[in-house]
Image (cartoon, rainbow, N blue to C red):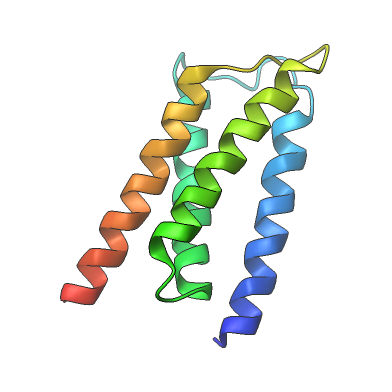
Length: 110
């Protein structure tokens, strides 16, 4: 895929994560206690990998941007009546970004 196509997918995924993060959580959707943390980590892992592939050579800039984005989502959630900002969610975001960094380094070394 070309960088332009990857960037389009990245921006679409970024928007989807924002929308899903601000929607109310339907009752019964949570199956286990730490499910939301796992969802945060996987979402930011996917965003990290997609962003790093779209902007090769900008690993740290993409990572820093995603960490800021995760923090802004938590602030936005705290401003809604149906969601709440959570520092643990941001740490799960950071874990996902960190895993993306590791995957990108491993990919370069392989």
